[in-house]
Image (tube, rainbow, N blue to C red):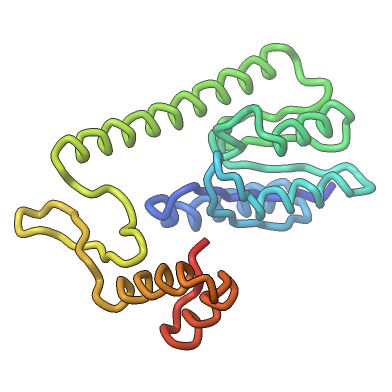
Length: 213
């Protein structure tokens, strides 16, 4: 059977872990004598646009022969057990079309896996999801504190630019160039003689900017 090796990280901070994952996965496949294909993915487990993982899972779903899908550990499989991709892979596993291997966890899941192994997989998914949710909670708390401290926490709106105050706090200031473009857009639209499409074209030709939807 061909092995589909999946190395995954979800943030830029984790991207340095991809080579190590890929090395462990390829060494595992070589030891087992598998023909293999490696896919490296950098996208969030909660992202609405998880194109790379979705494309890979759909490819595996279209296979006409059994395959092995290999993740380094359970938490690289997913941190969202309700995702469409996880449900599809589990259905393929139950139909005996794929095996799921997690070498670093020493766990191998097939259609005939005993309840103890399925329990380990389920517990691993719950722990991974808890870890991801806890990180999200910490980020929200940090943003709430920044707001209480009077600090800007996001990307500046059009017409403004992100700055850093002398105190080190992030803030926004008016951007002379883009603010004029915003002012002109409102005035043109208020005149009743310019459509949004015409204003978008003007932004593109005169300001070299794309229309912000």
